[in-house]
Structures are given as C-alpha cells and as structure tokens.
Amino acid sequence: MFSYSNKKADLKAYFDIKGKDDVAIVLGDEYIEKRAKLWDGEYYVDLEVIRNNINPKFYYSKEDGTLKYTTPDTIITSNIGENSWTDSNGGAGEEKYVISKEGDDTLYVALEYVKKYSNFAYEAFTEPNHIQLTTKWDEQAVATIARRTDLRVKGGPKSDVLRRLNKGEEVVLLEEFENWIQVKSADSLIGYIEKKKLKDPKKVTPEPVTDYQEPEYTRIKKDHLINLAFHSIGSEAGNATLTDYISNTKGINVIAPQWLYFEDAEGTVGSIGSADYVKEAHAAGMDVWVIFDDMKNNDKFKLMELLPYAEKRAKIIKEALAQVALLGADGLNLDFESILSEEKSQPFIEFVREMSIACRQQGIVFSIDNYYPIYNKFMNIKEQGVVADYIILMGYDEHTDGGEPGPNSSIGFVEQGLDLVLQDVDPSKVINAVPFYSRAWQEKDGKYGSYVQHMKNVQEYLSTNGISVSWDEEAGQNYGEGTTKDGSPCKIWVEDSQSIAKKIEAMKARNIAGIAEWAIGQESSDVWDVITSYTEGQ
Image (cartoon, rainbow, N blue to C red; front, top):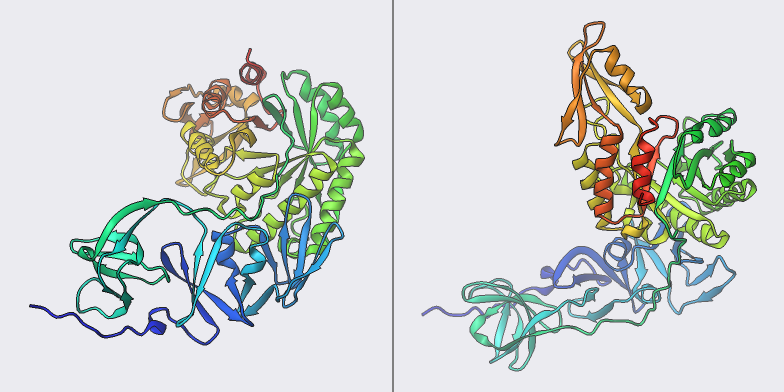
C-alpha cells in the first residue's frame, strides 16, 4: 500500500516569484512567463501581454516617452510615469494611479487603465502574488470536490502539495489522465488531483465582461466592385500618359497614381500630382486614390527615423492629406514596403491608426497595399483591416531574382494568399491585385535570372525566341520554354487574359471587394473584357 506525501510545495518557487513586487500571471488556464507588478497597490502588466492577449491598440513610444491609445477619432496620450492623459481632440484627465511605469527594461501598464478601453477580467491573489487574467469566455468543464483532497504539483501521490481542496469546492477541469486529472482551483492554482475525488461534472459558460462599449470604426464602402488600376509614374511628365493609357481600357472605376513620397528625413511629403489629371480621371468616371509610397529618396531617409515620433507622424499625415485635398482626389493609398521587421511593426501600425483618423475626418478612402501574407507578417494586416477602408493584396512576385525559376503569380499562390488575408480581414474590404507582367527566366553561367515582360509585349517575346506555350493547370497559366537567340535556355509562365480569368474565379468564389492591376499601360487590350465581366457582371 503506497502512502501519500504531505510535503508542501514552495509556492514562491512554483510561481517563480522574484521579489515583493513580482506577480505571476495565469492567463486563462495556463501560467505564462511574462510578469505583472504590484506597485503602490495597483497591478501592472507587461505591455506585450496586453497587446497580444487583451487589446493591441496600446502603443509605447520609447523615443517620445509616451503611451498612446488610438480610437476611431482620437489619440489618447500619457507620459510614462505620470497619471494624467490628454487626447488629440482637446480632452484631458487624471487617474488615481500612475498609468504606466518602466521596470526591468519593460513597460508595465496599470490594469485599471487597460480596463477603460477593454473587456476582460482580472482577479488578484496573495501568498504568493499571482493574478488571473480572463480574456475569453468559452465553455468550460467544471466539477465539484467530492471529499477533501490535496492539489498536487504533478500527478501522483508522491508529488508535493500546492494546497488542500475542501469538499464542495469547484474546480475547472483541464487535462485528463488515467487516474489523475489536471485542474485549476478557484484561486488559480493549477495542479493534479485523483479523478475519484470529483463529482457532478458539467459544462458552464462564464459570463463575459461587457463594461467597455467598443467604438464603431466607420468606413467608406463602395456599392460596387472595385476595379483599380495602379499608374506607375516617375515624374510629373508621367501624368500626361493618362489619356493614352485609359483610351483602350474598360471599366476602371479607380485610378491610383504614384504621386506622394518623402522628401527628407524630417518627413516632408513631396508630390508630383496634378489637379488636371484628377479632373480628367473624374470626367472618365474614375475616382483617384493617391499612392503614398516609401521608395523614392529612401537613400535620404529611413522609416524608423520618422514613424516612432508622434510629431513626425502628425506632420506626415497632415502634409499627405493636404496634398490629397489640394489635388481634389478621393482617397489615399498607402504603399509602405519596408516594414520587414518586428521593430518597425508597432510604429507602422500606429501610423496607420492615426492616418485612418485623419482620412475618416476628411471623408476620403483609405486603402493599404500589402505584400503576400507570408512576407508581410510584421505589417499586422488584422489591425489594418479594422481601421482602413480597403486592404489590397499584392498577389504577385511569387518567384523573383535570387530564387528558382517559377511563375510570377500562380493560381495556388493567389488562392493561398487570399485565404490567409481573409482569416483576419472582412472580405468586403479585400481587393486582390493582379500583375500585368510576367517574368521571363534565362540561364546564364548555370544560374537563372528573370526579366520583366509586360503583358502587351509577351507575344513578341515568345515569337522572337521561338517559344510555344501550353496551359499549365497547376499554375493556372500558359507555360513555355526554349532557347534565346544567344543560346541561353529560357522559361516563362505567361500572364495573359486566360491566367487573369483564372485568378478572378478565385476572387469571385471568396466574394471579395474587387480587383487591382499593376500596372496600367502594361496590359493587352483583351484583358479588360475579362476584368469587366467580373466587376460589371457582363
């Protein structure tokens, strides 16, 4: 006959408590490594825990020494280590506690402040210090302790005892084993008891916290499918190409010219836009969404010299929207393509939130271009989808220089990209951009390099190199290979009206908001019949 151990577990060691102000966190039904603090009678939690599990809209700017929270119409700012706040609409207030504090190279935010803008519950326990954070209200399995028993660190009679569980206590059932079961007690200790000590198992659904009323993020939503043509413009002289470019098109209802850029490291916004261009587009039945990108002059500035600073963000937004208004345009299309690290993600998404406020106030459409989801994981497309009017997926550049030859935009690539975006963004906001270009791959010295071939020129390329193509069902494109005049092996997956039609099938099946094309002037004229049969239902 085995005996049961009565040895008490060291609860401070169990929770890894490192000092009198250190507080362990039980998030839902598990302990996490991130910590909380108990300072001056208030509980503070690591901002990363708050962003990832409670509310992602809090933004910490080390550069400015501020914590910001952005709603649909205002930016609320508090200085680190202070109890007061101001907002961008002229409001101000004070809390009875310091709103946020730094410690251990970490920013901690008062849970009571987080509750002003979030629905969650927390309960604090002492001896040792730990808190229960509840952010989800899913159904739970619970049961009652049938007779007094010990809650143990591990399953088995020899394991140390966390505490005595009395008859009638209710526990949450977690993971079941042969004779033992993992449970969570009412004071958020997670351990093991024998299954035979339980009775009356049942399912319960906790009552959700609804103290905070989420504000509505209003948006501009067109009552038709979007057919947006990107217009690649390198200088003011390029504006004159609009007349020729649209003369052989059909059904375009939005034109997006590349006009706005950064002039310098202070965030000055330059423009090569034309009010006459806007008037011509309007006369042709098209809205104008002005592209603002971060590619020009990027040898003179770095985004991380701009976006982390509230003053520079405000300057950029004010100047960009002043240009949109001056030109008489209908929208702003944000095309920042250098957000390739976690370091840049938070300042970028705060910029997006703040830009959305200004666009909403000015009544213009706010759209954001995004790399393929696997490549843009740092751009927080989910949050973009909350604050922006439209999210544009750049569904191309599947294979580029530096990699193996392959299609520029295979059907599988497009379908997977859309499905990934639609996990986070409502389909009524998603626009899929298709390429009006292919990549011709040529081998030299044992390596392949790619050369862009515009759709309107691809037949000439095929003819010149004696390449015949056939339909590749897997790629959803016509494929051909051959030898160039200089004897180099070549391969090409062709973008044409047939491949665009295949992509449109995927878009229709997912009921998204429309199509975009990179770029007008590169296409063959027959592609417009395919596109308008989708956007206009002809």
